[in-house]
Image (cartoon, rainbow, N blue to C red; front, top):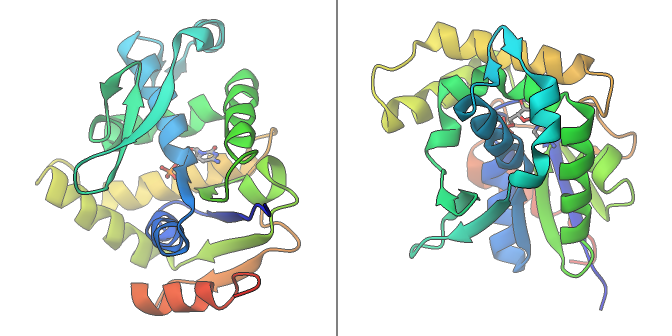
Length: 226
Ligand code: DC
């Protein structure tokens, strides 16, 4: 059986996950949100008192990775749920508290080694669509299709703000959301280990002014052997 791995990389809140989920469901492939995996490690670290915006206890986090079990489940409606040590944390990992520390936690080399190995193992036996920052460069450098999604920063901030408002009205401002996105982009781009980088053979999709349907159609036309 031929496995197809589709890598969907790009900056924060470009609409990668929406696109990747839709591709996976229409192709019948597994969908993996690698950002959720880094967010679960960040949430674990926050709860242990090892991660705050200006203070990351790298030694403690790196030493505890054996105790962090990451999994995914689906709810009755088929929606993805992130499961940390048996607990459904799908909502808890999407808060600003987690967004503030996740780039620092995800820059730790032992964290990346561990999560990248888990992600590579998932692609050994099944076709999948995986979204993240380093999927086409590090996790699956030989992926059958690599997409790199971009979008204007204001469009991204507005989209993310709307999501956060509907989950928790009044918790954050649009300006705070935009500042966090730009800060994470910079940290993700500048980290030494597997930085956010467009793979040379990635195809760029600009999601600034197209509808989700149009973006999906553009991506589907690029899927090999369709
Ligand atoms: O996709 P997201 O915004 O939920 O990801 C959260 C953070 O996780 C992101 O700011 C950087 C990190 N991340 C990463 O370093 N590598 C990945 N493959 C996916 C996410």
